[in-house]
Length: 301
Image (cartoon, rainbow, N blue to C red; front, side):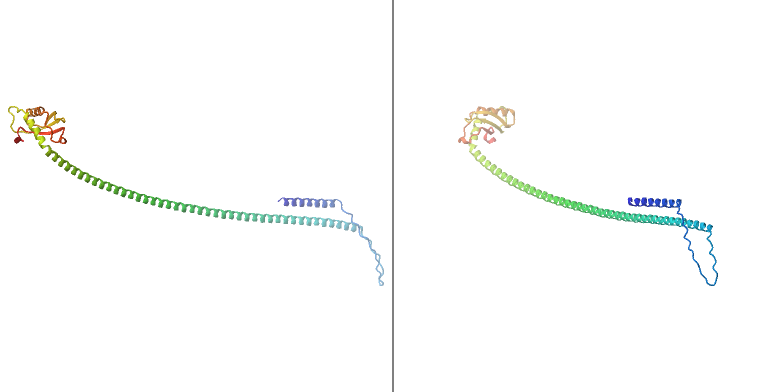
């Protein structure tokens, strides 16, 4: 653009210089010299010679003016031709500039189109990449969720299996404890039965061994018993006797009544009066507390 401006300024200055020269030429015209007169003689033998006519002065002046006018016209035409040539050159230059501008504009448009297409293609590629990345991210997210769901399902299956195994283990332990408890209870029951049987046998044996001692105690109590007036002839009661190792009675209390309070008091008094009670034949048979069945006569028991 700067170069075109310089060309335009140079062409304008050149035109101005040409106009100045033409204007100066019109102000100072050159004097046109008449061509030299050539005199010649024609000799004709058959005719007599005639004198040549003298040139007409007014015609020479008119001829000079015509030639000067002709030169001015030629200069004008030359100036017009130059101007036309400059105009054509300027028009050509402008056309070339317009063509160049159009070419540049077309080139710019093509470049813009190419740039727009490139940008559109780049945007399309970027959009495809973005969509591909989003799709990959979505697929990865789906895979991650599927993996997490599978891991969660497997974890639940493992936990359920562990829970079932734990429940089975607890159930087996419960059954084992129950069986052990049942076995222990049966053993304890058997041991209790055996102990009871042993105790019964021991009690029976001890009772059998204590029978003479108990009979001697009851006999001594009878001897110290005083029948209350108007009391029954046949009765029996159970009296609790607490004694010391030497047979001394500490306390006597009715466990099962003899039928009346008077009889009960009489039996308790008889036990206290019978102190000290007879000693057992075997010291190991001694018991500090005895439950003695009392009846007034042996056949009343």
